Length: 76
Image 1 (tube, one colour):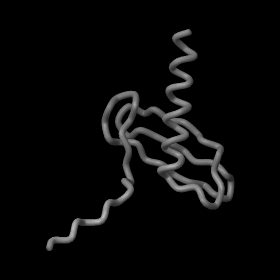
Image 2: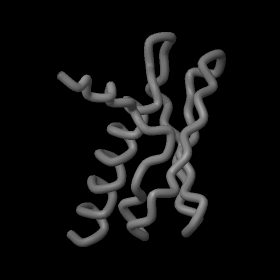
Image 3: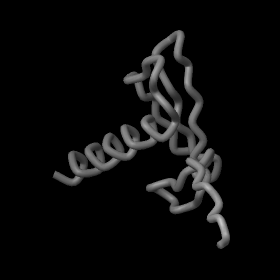
């Protein structure tokens, strides 16, 4: 019986603006902030919901929520 490789959480995420997998997340736990930046289109956002348990995937989820909330507010 073959073992399946264990799934990993990615280091780079898809950008909702340009569609490229080029979003990098930097956590600054001491300042309780994270930066989210697309290396392709330059989209950038600061997320201030960081604590000692926050992981990059959590920041990415918050970023996606804020991105689409902002886009929805801009079209209304």
